View (cartoon, rainbow, N blue to C red):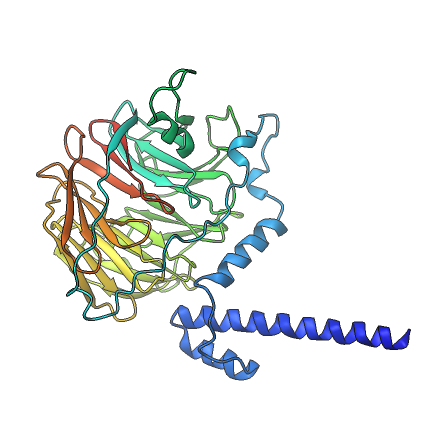
Length: 437
């Protein structure tokens, strides 16, 4: 009996030790991959973990996010349950899809010499229209939903499965309706949207200076269940990967960081306004939330520390004197893709602020144009306003590999690519939403 008990004790200790080693490995890899080498080295030496330990990208963050989702009562859904939930919409939302391909390595210096990849030809289909200009779009992290926002102050939510069914030859049951929710709760045009990483919650930023929270699991809810009142026009919004914080890029030059549980707004203690016209056109978190990036009207791309909220690098004149209109991180957080009203798209190295690549040949000088990667980061997409075309570049060679007529009346003003498959959407001043596959 005693020996059995000792064996159980030993087994328990061995398992606990194994778990500790696993956790330590994930911590070291997480710090190292986020360029926090000093901290990684300190943890590695004190826990006898090798610095070069292998771990999938963002594995620690993924496990923590899943654990938090299980652990915490769903505070965002602490609203009236009189409205029925839609089980089809809520089932499995927030699960993190497996990446379709390894990340593209932009660090190799000779990668522009090889042949460019061929991008499959994409066809587009009009899937819905707003009553005024379609201004912005966002896919959910799992790629199952798409939200669009308009100058008509409405938000449409599409279920991608239904969008695909709609594009099939007509079914006997009649036409498929891909719009599963429409929300009306803003007083002025919608500028940007984002999905909560774990819960069925959509946020919107508007010219009416508010950020609104919509629970799209509720079948008949048209209005927001929470509102943040900002002091400025909210131009851009981005959820932290934990879902507990969000960023608002506004007409103010500093991103506003909100705790969504308390609604407190945090600004860096030593912040100063950075210029007379440095309103923020776009703000985006990195995949782990350790950093965020802003594209500003003064032409600068700025990098911010996700913990201290301080500006750690300012690439002034990133696009000359032209207004920077979009900026987002690569999946490995080592590079930033930016676009501006100078008809250029640029790739910057996060660690040094060095310009790595330029993607030229598409004119965009008028609209708040987006440049985006496709889901595998092998291609960059943007808009040529003068020719009314969607342009695709090989992300490594920077060669233009495709030009497609946009099929919008007038140039589209927003592009957004699915995070999980070869599909994207374009939003037009012609009010139309087009889905490309």
